[in-house]
Length: 148
Ligand SMILES: [Zn+2]
Ligand SMILES: [Zn+2]
Image (cartoon, rainbow, N blue to C red; front, side):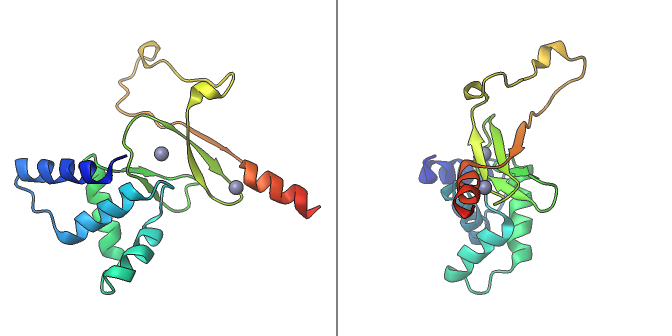
């Protein structure tokens, strides 16, 4: 994703709705879009603190929640322990490694036999799809092998 273009979209969105866009919200969003590894609020906070030593974790968290409500971020709860956020709000699936807790984007078309439900065949209204595959990533599999 083009970070500058995404930030411009957020600026436009806020301007059109007369929502004040704080510097902190902008920086949280920049960090989220720039980081492609589905960061946790703690990770974003760690990075931002280097530039803004006074920024609190609560501020980061609140801004991520607000960005999610505005449709600029997606909250994913990989293993229902702690939240991770995705700056890419397009329809896509995730693979979550239970060992190293990495979250990767995956294209279900590359997984043979993967079942992607057809919303038209379902008698409820689907407003959002979130498909997660959970397992052990290649890196972790190889690390275990080397350890033996
Ligand atoms: Zn892993
Ligand atoms: Zn993603």
